[in-house]
Amino acid sequence: MGGNHNRDLRAMREGLRAPVPLPPATWPPAAPRYKARMPSTLAEKLGHAPDARIAIVHADDIGMCHAANEGAFETLTNGPATCGSVMVPCPWFAEAARRARQSPGLDLGVHLTLNSEWEIYRWGPVLGRGEVPSLCAPDGALWRTTLETAAHARPDEVRAELHAQIRTALEAGIDITHLDAHMGTVFLPQFAPIYAELAREFELPVFLIRPELGDVGDRPLELQPIVDAVEGLVADGWPLLDGFCADSLHFAAGNGLEHNLARLRRLAVGVSYLICHPARGSAEIEVMTEEWHCREFERTFYGGEAGRAALARENIVTVGMRALRDLLRGR
Image 1 (spheres, one colour):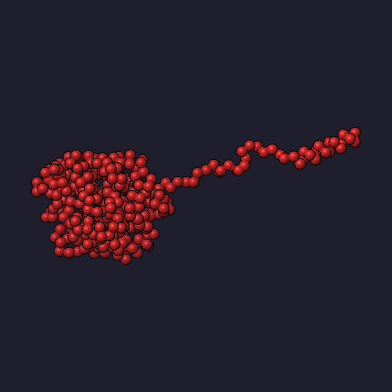
Image 2 (cartoon, one colour; image 1 turned 60 degrees about the horizontal axis):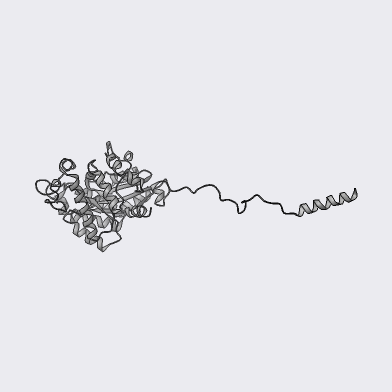
């Protein structure tokens, strides 16, 4: 019995020394089963917190006249304006293009233009009346109002003219960062698909907002047609803005500071398109429009310390449209 006992003890000791087999594929340990959260908002895709307030401070109407060029390039050079867009059919586009070539880092788009709204200062289409007659009023200039353009302009001629405006800007040496629209005429249902087609052809971000955030006072912006037209773009990665602050120039003389501070206070979380129309006060702009004082004030506010300080107090970050173009083309 003692012999058997000793053999049992030896077997136990050998068993303790033997390696214990491990289940297969337990080393190295498996990676955790989760994915890092991908940026979901436009703010996050641009590198900011999801609750950030971000403004694209946009100078409209560059090229319209010399005063507009003076004001716009001052605000773009000095800030806080971050980007702007040129009106290619206008008489002072050539000066704007020259200044853009001299400052290639500026963030400039094309302000697609189908109207010539002023009473005594007029411009016609880039292609000329003979090629796009439906775009022209009897005097040969573009129609003054969106309603007149809607009633007369043929979509095929609209597309030809807008394509020519973009090509002309490119040939003039402008590194186009985006497309937007003068007076919103391209947002009409019959023209909105053209806007989307041009965005695709040139791979450019376009002014496009969430319609529920597009109210100005008690007047809702009728932007649903353009949203419908470009929903395919959004699905393919075209950026959709979160808000639009449209009430540029809507203030009486002497009320500019209060009005524009209120504009900034109203900016919601997300990326908002905040337009301005800077121009240097002069006899030229005074003859053109009674609202010249608004344009002069916006030049000083969005091109100087008052605007920068107001944005800082509101913790508003500014970006330009080039960042959206980079995002789009890098998708």
